[in-house]
Length: 253
Figure 1 (cartoon, rainbow, N blue to C red):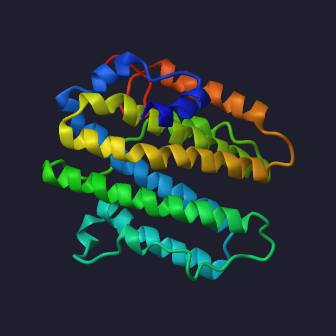
Figure 2 (tube, one colour; figure 1 turned 120 degrees about the vertical axis):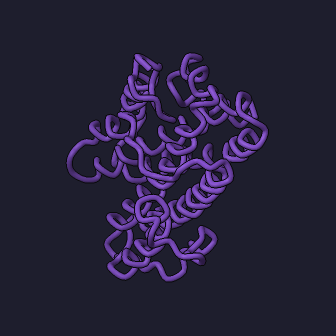
């Protein structure tokens, strides 16, 4: 595990504060940890779908992608519409995804983002199963400031919108990986095994996002990566009144 985490920790500007871990490990926090985790998996898939629709796919391919997400969104936002045999993550495949001829990054984006979507939706299913087994209600909850604050850093105009969103995606995936590893030893055996099983894919996701960001940029991205990384660390290290999976140091809880 340490060998897997070493590059993740080197990429991040700091490790999760112990005060967040102490709050997250409390038994009464399990419901919100799993609920927010479920929504984070869905949002990760939605982000990848947005990138593909904007920067790679033609109209037909874009419509096919929307169909992938709808059953998973229903499970959170429209449970009354959920059917017994709705689509599963295993059905996600690049087959039939047609790209625009003027999309230079279409090939790499489809290759990496389709795999990411498949894995994130599979993780969504796993978290949902854990929640149902424990009687935890599946419903929307208020999001933390984390992702929205990072999105405020995105520059206007392409390729900068794409570059910045990819770098932000890298930091979100890397922080998720680091936080799963930090929290796992303090959880019950079932959740611990699950969180450890996520580390390899989460570590690869941040590397995929970084590689795509450099492909999309006409110039080196090192300075921009560092700038966004410093902002990401401030969100993790500063006091945060709302406890969530990506929240900062617990304050006024």
